[in-house]
Length: 474
Image (tube, rainbow, N blue to C red; front, top):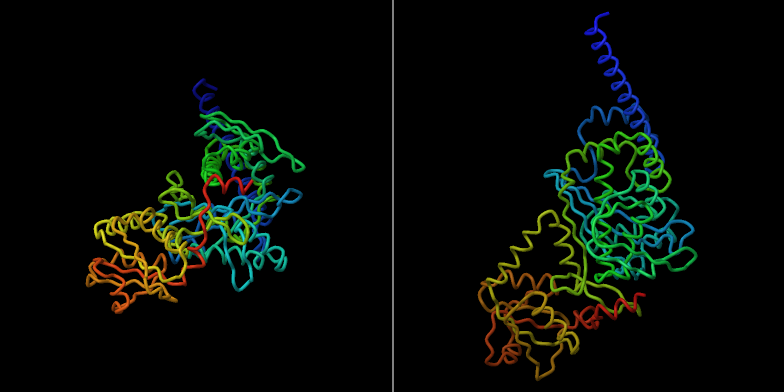
C-alpha cells in the first residue's frame, strides 16, 4: 500500500469516527431532551418520544405555539427557594420573558417582589411574591389551577396574557450553572453583604470584587440573590438576575457546552428534577426551533423600580406593611411599558408631544383631602414634567365624587389631556361649569383638573423614602 493510500485511509477513518461520534452525541442529546420533557412538563398529553423529538429538531414543521397569532409569546419565569428552605414557595424572582416572533426581538421585564397587588374576586391582598404560594395553598394540586392567581395578577398589572410559565428552585439553578461549567459575568461594583441568608436561618458573608468573574453555581446564586449591599436594593438585584440569565443562555448555546455530552446530561438532569412548566412535551421542539430565530444577543432588559424621576412605582405603606405601588392611580403606565417593551420609542414620542404642547394646567382640589393634592402636584411637576401647574383652593369647599379634566383650548392639547385621563385617571368633563369658572377667577388655563374623592385610595398614601423603605424591609 502506497503512502498516499495510507494517508487517504487514515483521513477516511478519522472522518468516519467524527461522524459516528457526532451521530451518537446527537442521538443522545435528542433522547435526553425527550426524557427531560416528560419530567418537567405538567401538560403531558402523551409522553414525548425519541422519534417525535428527533423529527421536531431535525425537520421542524411550522411552529405552533400559543401567542404566534399575535406575533408575541410571553413566558412567566418564577424563582423559588424550594422545599425545605425558608419561604420555600415565595417567589424571589418574577420575570416575564417576551419573544416577538415576527422580528425575533427578546425582552425581559422584572417585577419587584414587594409590589402590592389585589385579586378582588379571590379576596386576596398582599405582596406579589406570595401570590404563587397562595395559589398552591388555596387551589387543587393541579398546577393549572394553582397558577391561576399569579397569572391573573400579571394580567391585571401588565395587560399581558401569559402563554407559558416555568418555576425553578434555588438548588436547580445552582446545579444547572455547575452542569454547564459556570458562567462569566462582569460585576459593576464591589459587593460585601454580611447578611446573606445562610443555612438554618443564619447569616453569612458574601463578597465579590468589581470586574470580570467566572462564577460557579453557588456563587452565581448568591450574586443573583444578594441585595443588602446594593445601592439599588431589590431593583439592583433584578438587574443582576437578568444579567445572570443572559450569561446562562450564552453558556448553554456555546459550542463548548453543546458538544459536551456530560455537561448536557447533567444540565438536563437538573432541569428534570427542579423545574416545572406548562410547556407540553409536543411543544418543546417548536421552542427549540423558535430560539434559533430569536436575536438573543440583544435583549431589552427592563426593571420596574421606584425613587427615580422616571420610575413607574413608589414606596408606601399598604395594610400595615411597606410595599411598592404604581406612582399613578392605576397600572396604565406599567401596561404601556409592557405592551411597548420591544420598542419604547412610542412612549418617548408621546412624552415629546406633551412637552411640545407645554399646556398650562390648573388643579382644583375637590377631594377634601390635602395629602391628595400634594401628591398630584408632585406627580405632575416631577414625574410628568409639566412646567405650568397652578394649584387653586376652592373657597366654597365643594366636593366632587369623580376626577374631571376640562379642555379650554378646543382640543389643541390632546396628548396632555389624554395622559391625565388615562393615568390619574380622570374623565372628560366637557363644558366647564359656572362654579369651576368662579374658582378660576382671573387665572388662565389650557386644562382644568378637578380632583375628586375617587383618587383618595391611592394618592392619599404617604410616600416612603428609599432609606426608610429598606429599613422596614429588613
